[in-house]
Amino acid sequence: MEDRVGGQLMQLNPIDKEKSTKKLVNRGRKTANEMVDKAAHVTALLVAACFSHLLFQLLAAAADAVKGRDAQRNTERISGSAGDVLEDNPVGKLKVFIYDLPSKYNKRLVTKDPRCLSHMFAAEIFMHRFLLSSAVRTVNPEEADWFYTPVYTTCDLTRAGLPLPFKSPRMMRSAIQFISKKWPFWNRTDGGDHFFVVPHDFAACFHFQEENAIARGILPLLRRATLVQTFGQKNHVCLKEGSITIPPFAPPQKMQAHLIPPDTARSIFVYFRGLFYDNGNDPEGGYYAR
Image 1 (tube, one colour):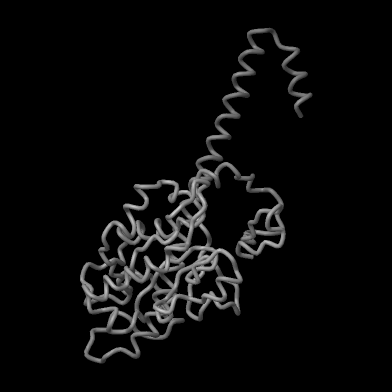
Image 2 (spheres, one colour; image 1 turned 90 degrees about the horizontal axis):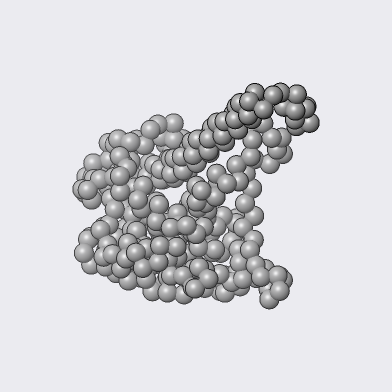
């Protein structure tokens, strides 16, 4: 194709050749711009789909949870089985109250190190931002079905940009202590109607080595809460029943940079193995999630 086009250009006079070359360049730019626009659109759809999936799962869990609540509470908003409500739009049925925590648990960490916005565990930040402007948010905790505690447990980074989870348990315990003293809702259910985003390697086990994560287990304070996490290995100590698994965060710019033509033949749609390790110092991959 290139030879043929090149051959045609060689037969044109210099003026026509220059016009034809500009036409080809402009066509190429138009195609590139269309691909970038498509990439941005796909990215927006993926983000929306991810959060919508989470809201539907929370709605389903809420539908089951309200059956055991005090009959005096107003639960008309949610009725039927989980299977029924999954077909509905969560807006108007699901109400989420977001705890207003001191900035040391979230926003101040991002201000201190903006790299937290672009690593693979950034879902905890963007989930918070999404819910703050979501139609399911309520500022009246008395009408809430779910309570969200925005703690950024993976925003403590090394110089190399790797998150250190060692302070995470202490930070989480401190946040829960704060909300349980200021509001009555945690103590009412021991966190049974609360959810947390814990996107690190082994989620609420808060360790990047699997052996140590298993030995630690899920932070006891969180065992009644719903955990939203990227770790989803079944029959594992760090994945408890009722957890919601979401994809790891990927910056839109990187997704656009690796965009491939839509007509490319593919045998696998989406695949994330989640195995990262230093082959020289850790050939068995024991330091990271499989």
